Amino acid sequence: MIELVGVGKTFNPGRDNEFHAVREVSLSIEAGRVTALRGPSGSGKTTLLGLIGGLTRPSVGRLRLHGRDISALPERFLTALRRDTFGFVFQQFQLIRDLSVLDNVMLPAVPTGRPHADIRARALRLLDEVGLGRRAAARVQWLSGGEAQRAAIARALINDPPVILADEPTAHLDSALSRQILEILAELRRCGRTLVIASHDPLVFEMDLVERVVDLRDGRVLA
Amino acid sequence: MIFQPAALALALLLASSLNALGLAVAGLFALRMLRHWHPDIGSEAQIALERRTHLVSTLVVLSLLLSLPMLALFTHTADAMAPFFAGAMCAVGSLKANAWGLPALAVMLVGFFLAAAWLVLHRLDTRGWDQPLLLAKYRLLLLLAPLALAQAALLWLYFGGLKAEVITSCCGSLFGPAATGTLAELSALPEAIARPLFFLTLALTLAAGATLLVRGRLGRAFGVLAGLNFVVALAAIVAFIAPHIYEQPHHHCPFCLLQAEHGYAGWLLYPLLFLGTAAGLGAGLAAGVRAQSLHNEAPRLAAALARIAVAALASFGAAVSFYLWRSNLVM
Image (cartoon, rainbow over all chains, first blue to last red):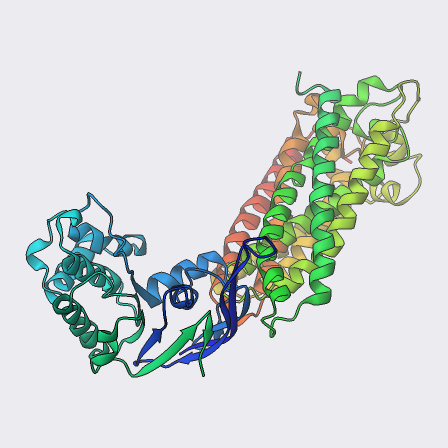
């Protein structure tokens, strides 16, 4: 489904602070499976996730989605691709303060032009599914860490993307809350979605969730 | 003040120089790109080239948008300068004040349609996820860039070489009965031939455009006919439309139509003809694109351009018919 061929990402190329975050990564991510990117901080997990999801462009190499090269896709198509294909769950939740939980969840669907009532109905259903139905009207700064991450997962699902990219989804949560989040992710796998999780949390790998582990160090995939 | 010929000439020189500079930079990039383009390889150089195409294309779009109104501006400036030259009655006199005026106009004319074609290709290319017209676009740029440089050089030579004491010749020397050459032969074309030919070509062009709009067919034929119609229409203007507007059988000049004493008829006819032709050629170009990723977008753009072309050319035909109907001239 997603294929990376010799992908690399260099920040500040040619300058004193040049940094190779990802180097020559070749990888195939199969549809409907859970792939975990494992490695210590600075190993390139987040950058690789950003490359897969089209949040950043590679400096070298090719990325293909269903056989289509998306490495140098014009921004117009990349935006549509991000919106329709990928749902993002970030380490720091990235919810917008002073907006309600419901508004945060609805937001990625607004540019699609779907009727507002449809978006709202789907957002409320997703919030129910992640156990936040009663907190829909609450402002996001009032949520606990676990609630905020569940809201972020609901937001990632609002456009019904086939692929969920989760960056350290349990990083700021205790074990109980982490298990809750991982249960939700397991449910997404059962629904046939493809999951790519970047994590170094042992709990993620202890549970029967991850089907394939890709170990990273210094931006390279370990054999 | 800004409509003074000197100010307009400065504006033209500035615009053509910027246009030439932008297209020269883009042309050099096009050369590099066409030599080193390997889309199957994800090398750092290839990725950098792919990214830079977006930037260069934006530069070209800005340069070409700047160049499109220059044709009208140049013609108007030449017309406005006529009173400064002994012997000049209209733009022709000004353009013939030295050797560079008419070549500059000719290059600008070619550049106008090539620029329009490039913009159509670019519009389509950016609608395909795999940018299927990228190479065609950059090959065309190799033609446009030298043309822009030639245009700027000719304009500098023309405006820089103008001398007030030069006695130039009026339009009668190009389009009158005593003149020689292709333009003179056009002037001598009998109305009995030119008139039916003009209306037949226009009718065929409009019919092809209507077929493209209604049935989605004859797109390329419409493009070819729009081009042919342009040539025939220019010939018709010289042969019989202009004399009917002037109501003088031996006055064939297509530039005097721009003047106030003839009701600025040229400023109605030429924009419609140029717009219709450019849109028609663009529609033909778009209809000929067969890229898989543009199978929806290409026919949609072809139809949109055909609508503009048909409307402009039909209005042009209606305006010509009105001038002929109003004319008291019997040739």
